[in-house]
Image (cartoon, rainbow, N blue to C red; front, top):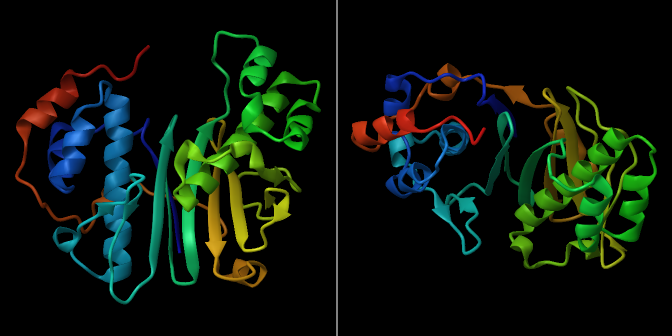
Length: 278
């Protein structure tokens, strides 16, 4: 079981860091990452790819250069292994890239992270009206119940994060009607510890085989991991991680092996890019 978080904003890579890191991922991944306009997105995405390879290498004892990651029809990364049932997922937004990984009894897994800030041009209430169709009435009641705008924003992003990680786990993408996936919150989220008593209903039917691990990360981020078990989920809480572990670049690349030749053009491109839009 792995719950990792990497602080991409604080990571100030050297030329040789990027040269090495970009040699340790698959060619099609590198090509996709190279298309990002801003350094910030290149960093987040690159770290996500490296985290997946580190996780697979650790649980399978395979060398990085013996690992091939595939994508399913919805673009979700997966790894084929004869003996292990391996589930992992990554997400990045704002400051962080996060990974969740599990072996064994899990049907599917999804993770999402969000920065809890509203930076749109519209008034918050206009934005909520625009988003109306994605949330059930009961969810809107919870979002709107506080008179304090920041609490509304926090609850909005908490629900949105839950829906995203559920959809990422099931692999259905945004084709699904999000209003029919309804969450009931029971406990406030906190730092350094998972809250795992949120309940999901699909078409008004409670889904007992799901667990959601929610926590807060610094710089006002919320994150949620969705875990679907083959049977009732309650017995499985004992085996899950209690919180996220921060990892740095040195730890991430500890056993990394190059699979591609060093690419100075990729590196030059990276350092020519602006960090972010503003």
